[in-house]
Image: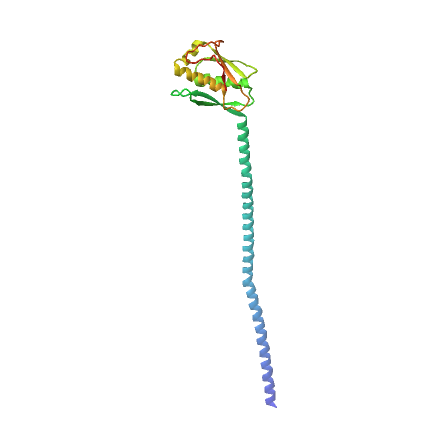
Length: 223
């Protein structure tokens, strides 16, 4: 009987120890899980922070790319406007030429300079500006050249005032040919495509008689 009681007591003790071990194991697992959660939690937070940082950086890059794209789109527009402005500016004037002849070959006509004249100017105003350029830039003298008329046939008549002052510009065969070419070719403007004169008649002190030996002005010079 005592043996049975002892065995029963031993079995109860083992049972209690087993339950205690199981409880301890359960608590240990819970503690381990809690520790693992605590360990994983910073990682999750760090991942969230990194993801948020990446998203912010991506948004900044997208914003910068969008701004660059807009700038590139606007830049051609500015260039286009600049080109339009230049075209408009160029269209307001036309380049007219002052001509002369080469000294070694007076039959060869060359450009002396360019004169910009407004398109809005009348034909007479354009001719007067060309004559002013001839006097001031080419002959560089106080001689006078006056527009007399433009008849219905498109023939321009000009008058060289004061033969004595003009004489020095027509002295010698080469000097006379060069000065004559400068006046005639500049006024004819053969390359000009707009509405222009068809010929030039030159008077000297109002006379169409031949005055300068090396530069006859009797005939009309046609384009």
